[in-house]
Image (cartoon, rainbow, N blue to C red; front, side):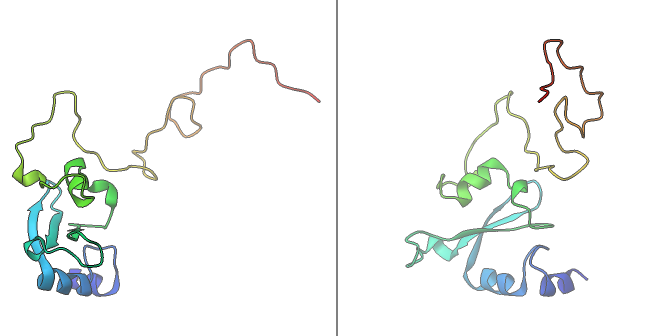
Length: 133
């Protein structure tokens, strides 16, 4: 059934055209913890139109850009030339693990005072008076 979704939708992993292009011109560079696969043009060949190599990601599930970890994001956008799989980077103790964008879900961030927050809205300070025309 997954192959059927790939034929008719673009948001479920990859389309047939993307699969063919990846097979023909792509070179696997690495994989992240979420199972997303990262590719570049075979042999690092420079695209004559762009002037640099093409890089792309095949998502393990739905195509959602916020699931790309920061290291891979930097590599995809040519901020870093070395993919995270080839560097010896260790996260600092104050760095949190990557978390996808939760906007629109029940896990979305809702600050104190938000009408959607579960907590009771705090009382307004006593120096506030509503304007009356």
